Image (cartoon, rainbow, N blue to C red; front, side, top):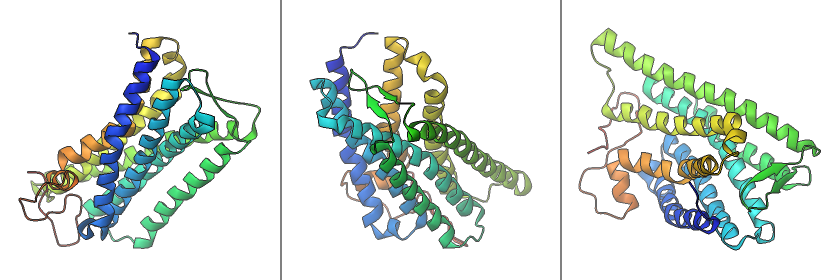
Amino acid sequence: MHLPMPTVGWIHLCSSLTCTPLLIRMCYVFISYQEYRRHDCYRIIAQYLALHIFCGSAYILYGVGILFNHDLFGLGRIAHITTITSFCCMITIDVVLAINRVILITQVEVPQVFTSALQIIVWIEFGVLYFFLCSPFGGLQLGSDQYTITYDSTKAFSWIFDTFRFYSTVSLSCTSLTLYVFIWIFLGYRMYRFKKTMTSKAERNIALQAGLTFSLNAFTGFVYHYCYLTLMEREWTSLLYVFEQMMNFMYVPLIVYLTFNSKLRRQVFFQPSVVEPHMAFIITTNVTPPSVVT
């Protein structure tokens, strides 16, 4: 497989210009519509989408930088820092979403301040990582192709960050996996014990959507940490890696959330509502909302 670099640049640019406005619109729906905003899980999802929006914006700079073979006066490096930091926080917020879904499906009583504190930690992590990667201690350098990056091992934070990213990705991904396995075991136990899951279709959709987004984030992290050097040895495998990252950062949230939630899909695309409002993700005590999937 051979693609000229200008073609790769155009693919990045067109994908970002197509997906980023839709991600912004979806995030806007979650934070502006009261039916979503008043529930914690939607607020978490909105923050998760915000990280994808940061990545989509960075991909605009990727595309322009590749097309003009220029670092855009340092903006190309900043774009990479934005994407790297956002992905680290996606792995963290996956755990927050998993905890939220355990709480919703099991209906266990957990203080609101607990999940709120976890959300604050995500943005503290974003700020700290972004600051140090942008600083002289970061050691992040843009390659001559205006796309690949390297770390200067002589810089203090470069080694620290590389180690942190590896262990945080592995440990947090394992934590999320454990929580999702628990969810499915819990639902399976309900089916075995009561001959039915005692959960609505909406609850099962929650677990399915969460599992899909987590799995693809974990896969992206696994490929980077264990396969990156091997993939970069050949042009066609390096392109596969590049496009897999692009799919995960921009296309996956759109595909997952818009495919499984017809009401959200109508709201994002400004279509008139044809059904009564339903809550796709929310399970509250003594109330089981019908599924939004139609």
